[in-house]
Amino acid sequence: MTGLADGLYTVPPGRVAAVVTHLEMRAPAPLRPAPLPEGAAIRRVEQPDTVWYRDLFTRVGGQDWLWFSRLVMSHAELAVIIQDPQVHLYVLDIAGTSEGMLELDFRQPGACELAFFGVSAAMTGTTAGRCLMNHAIPAAFAPGIGRFHVHTCTLDHPRALEFYRRSGFAPTRREVEIVPDPRLAGQLPRDAAPHVPLLD
Image (cartoon, rainbow, N blue to C red; front, side, top):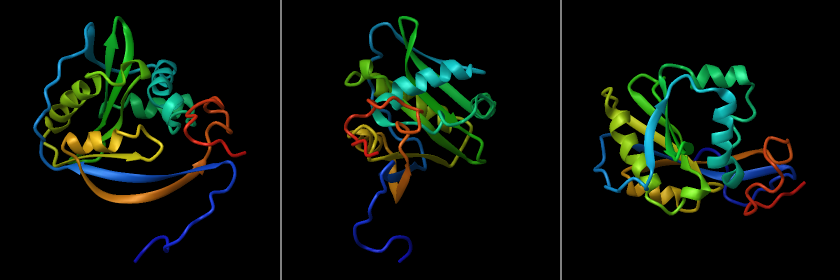
């Protein structure tokens, strides 16, 4: 046995804890057809602006699900990642506004990480997520990779894990993560993710 022993562990004030599940797909899974929402289009954004990206990142995952990893980076650090030619960013546009994001990271040879994936609150419950995944799977495997992988956690949308499994990803391992609460550090407003108690 490695890692934590059985039992309960106190999460210090000012921190949040989550169980992280890693999943992977070794060959393209069958797509689950779904029509694009009315007025929607999926397009690739090359050399994205960091201010624009942070706004989209926050609307898709920060405000509701405490995504913060890209918010603690400097603009220069973020630009190095999202403007790398091996990092492909796609967005779901509705009437000219980006309401979903799909980020594929090919920087590891032979693999692709589904680095970030989600839709805004306005598109939750529509076919938007399935449409993005139907775009993600063939785009990820197009270069001939052998592994497409993603991770999600218990802070994310309660249906996220099952969505990935239905899409063809298989769980491979789990971890426990404890990190500073981004609401207390000022990366996100204090009213973000109200389902996660704020303990300061």
